[in-house]
Length: 416
Image (cartoon, rainbow, N blue to C red; front, side):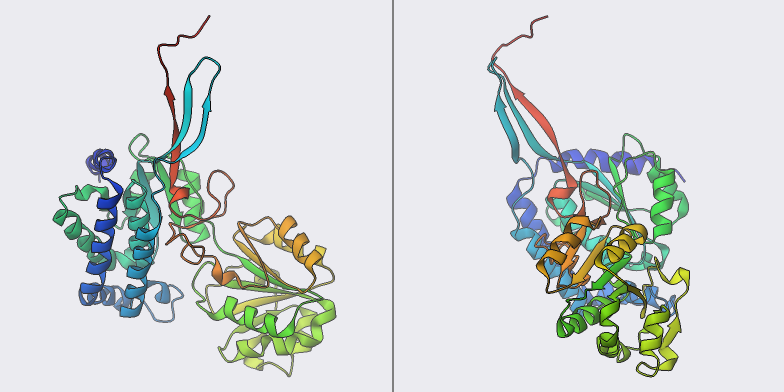
């Protein structure tokens, strides 16, 4: 397989994107949102082909599944992107030097963004809308599990682009093969940045094999710490929402940390989870309190592997801690740097948690389920970056642009 020509066509198309004005870009995105709803039956038909090849018990099944309601939500997110200001051409810094040179730091597209992802067809829409709005062409490398769905979505995108006489190479779906991934990772000079979205195994593979720069969107091993001064009712709602809203997404909670002084409240905190048949892997102190107060078939003894695991399922670990500091140390030692939360009525404890937790998103009295570009007012997201170079957290329009320096002179020359 040789995808060099495809990469070159996408590179050439990315330069044409620079010629589009903001009004045209917004008209195209609105047309794509309308086409997504109008072509819902076609997209769902192709999605069903992918679903038929996957067991419903597979944790990825929910991520793969599209419905008319989800497509309407995707179209709504796209319209939200339209409503946002363009991230391009912003003067980030300006100075006039003593010699009269005017120097401006101006936002600018990356050029060609490669995104590698698994059974998440919604990513196809999100990535296109954000990349198009920010002036980036995009190479999509979806997983084989969602290939029929992704082909259908890209077909809809291309139909809209053709209607507006825009080069369809600004968005290309690569073959669902490991060879295609390998080629994109080596495409130095043709791909500007690669963003992997998926399992820790996928992200590690990309990091280890890419010659192209990578922005990591890490696995979401998310914790909630219920403090000695946590409110019980808030805690019940936050824990339930963080764990069960959608268990297969990266912002779902994987571990509850509980201050030892609140062990008596643990059955009440976990009661709503039983209604969703959440399996609990509890440490010894938590197990003793829950035994007889939580369904025996759903209560297990924790093992060392229970902690630091992204379950992507109706499963959750519970660890008892003796102090706020122990909770912070545990999270920083075993977390993935994604999203962490504290439930507390003590303002100082909340401030300490926010200061000391090393994660992209840190919450006080709110669930980690809010870690999402749309919820942050970004319209949508390319992913949630857990690294510290350039973007961190939900990556919206501003996070997938870079900048360049523009220098305006009037005949000045530099002295020796």
